[in-house]
Amino acid sequence: MLIADVLAKKGNKVFKILQDKMVMDAVTGMASFKVGAVVVVDPKDGVLGIFTERDVTRILASQGAAVLQTPVGEHMTPNPITCTSTDDDSAVLALMSKHRFRHMPVLDHGTLIGIVSIRDVVSQRLERVEFEAEAMRAYVTAG
Image 1 (cartoon, rainbow, N blue to C red):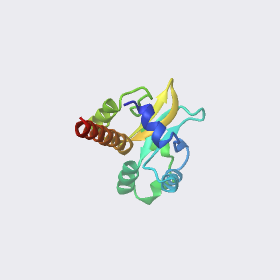
Image 2: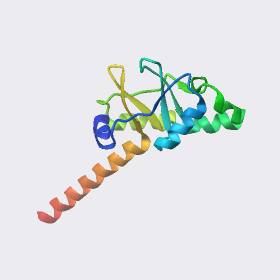
Image 3: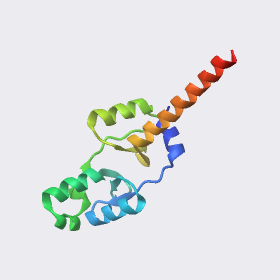
Image 4: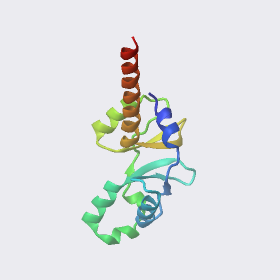
């Protein structure tokens, strides 16, 4: 299955933020949109980094609440690993697992078209496995 299939099911809305916006803006947006990551972009929508719930926890623990008033660009993970809509979901899961992250921006021809989480990809794969198992049961009982 392709990442395009995952995006078709979950949608391609992405919460983005400019690198000079405050960490508090990122945290407020993630809570409002009920997402675990925000893609940090430049004014032309180029992907610069990603800022996640894990980043929030790490910087709050080490620097305290004052960090909420600093630019998100200072705390993002720069140059995140990305995928394309034509990538296989197995390869994307393998990358996420190997590098221990849960969110991956999807870029086609350098343009941000979505973001997938490990949950999105695993859920889609489980649905496919359940469908295939049901088809196999139907085949066995019919024949």
